[in-house]
Image (cartoon, rainbow, N blue to C red; front, side, top):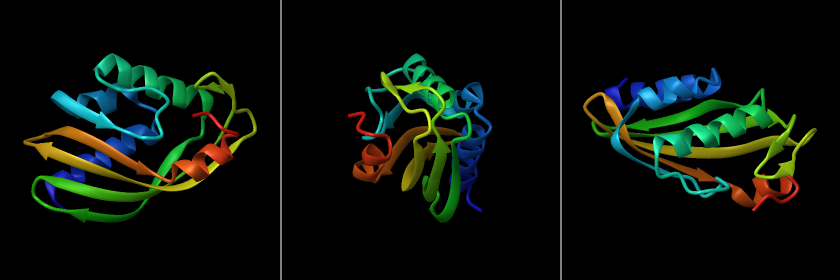
Amino acid sequence: MSEAAALARRFVAAHNAHDVSGMLALLAEPFEYRDPAAPASVRTRADLADLYTGIFGAFPDIRFDVTDVLAGDDGAFLVFRTTGTGAGVFAGKDVRGRVIDVEEAGLFRVSGDRIWLVHFFSDTLTLDRQLGGYH
């Protein structure tokens, strides 16, 4: 496995452990985060921490299950199934009882032993429908 794929998988493992600090520790300075499904822009580590604290609070069982990996020396592309059940409020909307089950992917670009780009690709239409409209 390439170092890029290993770093991307460590990010996913930290996500699945709901370890925000662990996710942040893998990021370069500066880093870039793109996610069209996110309810707000992420520009700083604090923004990213707020986003994931909110996600993990609203979906205490959310997880990524990696189904495919394409990796090179400076990056990896992971395809995964995202699942979870709402148990609170996300992006100002009550998502209790709402089930997420959507295919997503993430492009992770690395430099050395850190991730400088996390770019998620989501089926935002399906996700929006599953959550009852949050965008």
